[in-house]
Length: 626
Image 1: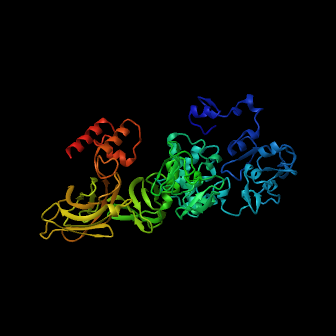
Image 2 (image 1 turned 180 degrees about the horizontal axis):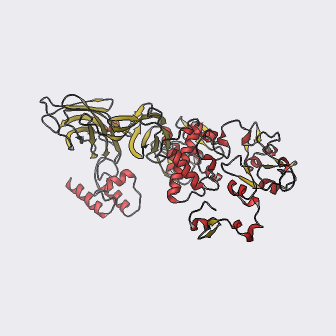
Image 3 (image 1 turned 30 degrees about the vertical axis):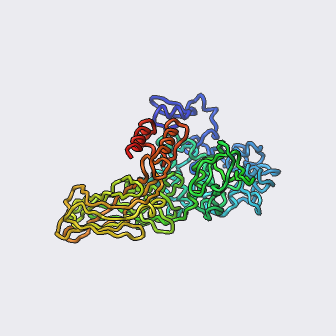
């Protein structure tokens, strides 16, 4: 109780408060002293202070039990310490630190090197074994996790690789989860270098530390960390949450190949998980009853029918999912291969550049299905293999945060670098930025994407390459022309494997002025005749190169943009605007049907994020004008 500084904390902990004495335990009072027993004390400081003895817990840092001893070093029963467990009932045995109950044998003192049998060996059935918190193997039968010679991660205490970390001996997650969270964030949080005391930890342990760090950040901000370290919280993750075989098997799940996609997925053998199957060729009856969400060969969508039996009498119930997210996790994401995401994290200190080691990199799927994390090595480099798709990547360095988007392409190296800080070394350390502007494009037309330049030095020439990301990007968007906005500059371009490669320079020695945002060129693309309405193509810079008037490189970077494809008003995506689109739009406006994302975009003519009579009137005017 002496550790609490405020009266509110003191009284909430069941202690007593005095204006002069501060916070103290009720056993400080003479009146209650005779009722105080050593077993009532839960920390070594007060235990030793009242003449009791403290036995450290083998499982929880800072945990243990307080008991009475006499002058001969024996316990209060007069028995030697090694035999104080004998004679205890099963309930007393289970509550006494260092004792363990063995069926048909009684209570004995338990030590790590004890020759006594593992109590889990007495369970004959898998059900009894798992209910008792033991492990079950088809060949080994029932056994306790302490039988394993593996990593200390299986124990209740901290991993062995963290025992050298300063202050861990004072951390007790069960008694003070807030203090434990504070210690984890102080040593491994995003605003701190990753503590070198954990350098011997395995990848699995580092992943677990990072998971707890993220949980602690959230619970401390919400002031609800009380149940963070409860054992039952470890069961919150489903097998489908693990994205690689190693994590899957460590968490007692099974790694199997998805029969539809040909790639691995993590499943729980005890659950009847749905499988991914193309249902586009099956008819389930002319009924409006919703039977679930299934894969149609291209996307996850709602299916209706009279039952899960098709026209041939085959039951497809295991191919339906309860949510779009569950379907996408099994089908959409697993249909794609994997690519390598890598890059560097650098920090600019005036006129010097540091490669930041130990920087936390968080990678999250754009739909939230995947969350990965890793750390940069000693030279500031990171690398991770992840499924193809769009991601939001966050990097942390020196209390600063940067967030970038990227689309990872399968079977390729996808580079994404982060640069923190600023140059401050005079004009020779300039910078330049190339920025593309977001645009909306219609099918069968050309679209111009504005390119802007900003630099703190005059610029004499620019070279860049831009690639398109997104499903069907190469078929829907094709580089056509590069137009210079300044007659004093010449612009040339080429396309290579769908990448827009451009160069802009002056034959007359002209330069772009410094410290201004200048529209220097338009990137012109041809749009195909039949893109999916509302689909979005991301444009990202692959390389940038900027020159000053003397031919010296100015450090530069590029900021990409997006091209939204579709024809406003073409609700049914048939490349025409007519009465059919009006009928669909009216159904959406009065909630008879719910539009898809593409349909919503095409119906929201006035871009006010709602479909109503205003949009209907405008689309009718479009039809009449045509």
